[in-house]
Image (cartoon, rainbow, N blue to C red; front, side, top):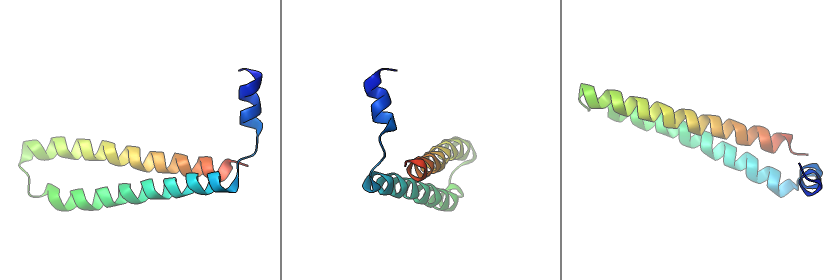
Length: 80
């Protein structure tokens, strides 16, 4: 790691960047929950083969949204 990178990592974050990370995390979590809600209602109308593929894809997308939201929240909370 170069000296410039160390200096950038050591500088304290501004309150606006913390707020942006936390707001982004909350938005991703809300989108993940909305995705769960929408796909549960629509999955019952699909055929058996397509339902399996859609469920796997939606669970993966939900995992990414919830995990990414939690990561953003932790990063925003921890930046001091």
